[in-house]
Image (cartoon, rainbow, N blue to C red):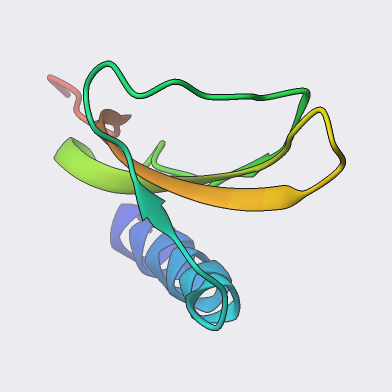
Length: 80
């Protein structure tokens, strides 16, 4: 059951990534200045164990939409 849940989560993340792929994605670098007025979406990494890429879609103060890729530690690790 857990494997099915992980597979569905990965498929949803890939679908979102494919939608964003047609648009420009900026890769975050430490110290980069960001102008974030409103976060629209953050890719789900709750079922991934370990460091993985995440994409945040956000709106800046001028109303422009941006996509930012950055590294996070997924929340799917457990000791069960």
